[in-house]
Amino acid sequence: MRTPVTIIGAGLGGLTLARVLHVHGIPVTVYEAEPSPTARSQGGMLDIHDYNGQLAVRAAGLMDEFHGLVLEGRQAMRVLDREGTVLLEKADDGTGGRPEVQRGELRQMLLDSLPADTVRWGHKVSGTRSLGEGRHEVTFAGGGTVATDLLVGADGAWSRVRPLLSTATPEYTGLSFVETYLYDADTRHPAAAKAVGGGSLMAHAPGRAIHAHRESGDTLHTYVLLPRPLEWFAAIAFTDAAAATARIAREFEGWAPELTALITDGDTPPVLRPHYALPIEHRWDRVPGVTLLGDAAHLTAPNGEGANLAMLDGAELGQALATHPDDVEAAFTAYERAMFPRSAEVAAEGVGSDELMFGDGAPHALVSAFTTFIGQEQTQ
Ligand SMILES: Cc1cc2nc3c(=O)[nH]c(=O)nc-3n(C[C@H](O)[C@H](O)[C@H](O)COP(=O)(O)OP(=O)(O)OC[C@H]3O[C@@H](n4cnc5c(N)ncnc54)[C@H](O)[C@@H]3O)c2cc1C
Image (tube, rainbow, N blue to C red; front, side, top):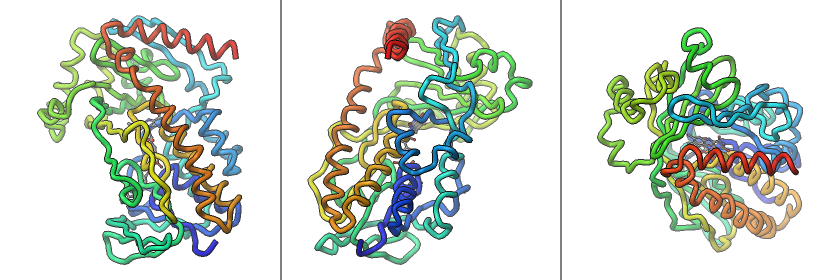
C-alpha cells in the first residue's frame, strides 16, 4: 500500500476499520473533529447483533474484550400501553443474540486496541478535493492539509468526504427523539424504574411513544419519539429546560405517571434529536481512491442497525484492503458490492414501520409484530 489509509471520523465505523487494518499490519491514520475521546458524551446503550456488529468485533479480534462490556439482563424488553399495562414481555435468558453495551465503552475498547498515535484528535475536515489519478486532498478547519491515495469517509451523517462521490444530502425523516436521563432511578425514581424493568420499555400510542432503557447501574435513558415536522419542534425553546419538558409532557397527557415521569423527572435537560436519512438506494459510481462507510454512506431513519452496520462496513472494508493490498480499486469494488445492497435492504425494512409504531393500531399492531418476530426467533 503506497500511503497509510486515511480515515475521516473516529466513530464506531472508522475505528473498526482502523483496528482491522492494524490487525493486518496496514498503516492507518484517523482524523477526528472532536478534541479528545471524552469531549462528548457518547450516548446510550447499543445492542450489538450476532449477524452484523458482532461479526465486526470478531474480525477486529476483540471478542473477549467485548464480552467484558456486556450488561447482563438488558435484552429483556416489554411493550406497554399508555395506562402502563404490560402487553408483551420478553425475559433476557442470555440467548437473545443482541447483547447490550454502553456505546462509550465500545468506542473506548476500539481506541485501546490501536497504537496511541493512530487517531489525530481536533482535526475537523472542512473540505476535500480531487488531485487526479486517485489522489485526494483533505483540508482541516484549523489549518493544514493532507494528500492521500486512500481516503475513507467515516465522518457520519454530514460527511465532508461524501461530495467526492455523491450529490445526495440527508433529509429530515419526519421523526425526532427527545432524550432524557434519570439517575439512581431505583432509589430516586422507583416507579419509573419499576416500569422500565431490567431491560427496555416501549410504550406506544397513535402519534407518540416512549422508549426507555436501563443502562449501567440504575440509570434510565429515555427517548421520547414524536413524528412531527421540524417546525413543530422549532416552536419549543429547548434552551428553557422546564418549558420544553412541560411542552413535550403535554403530548402525553393522561398517560400513566410512571411513564410520564421518564419525561418530567429528567435529571438532564431534554435534548432534541431530529433524524435525517439519505435515499434508501444511495450509491455512487466508483471514484478512484475514495469510499465511504457507515452513516456517511447510508444514513437511515433509526432502526437499531446503524452502529452495527457501520462496524460491519469497517470490518469488511479492512478485510478487503488486506486481501488486495496492491489493488485499492479491487478492494473498494469488492467492499461496495456487498455494502450497497446490504444497507439498502436494511433501510427498506424500515419503510412502513411508521404505521406500526405510530398509526391508529398502536400499540397492538406493534405487539403483534413483535409476537411474530419472537416466534420466528424461537423456531430458528
Ligand atoms: C438517538 C440515536 C439512537 C441510535 N440508536 C442506535 C442503536 O440503538 N443501535 C444502532 O445500531 N444504531 C443506533 N443509532 C445509529 C448509530 O448511532 C449510527 O448509525 C452510528 O453511530 C454510525 O456510525 P459511524 O461511525 O458511521 O458515524 P458516527 O458515529 O456519526 O461517527 C462519525 C465520527 O466522525 C466525526 N466527524 C464528523 N464530521 C467530521 C469532520 N468534518 N471532520 C472530522 N471528523 C468528523 C464525528 O465527530 C464522529 O466521531 C442511533 C442514532 C441516534 C441518533
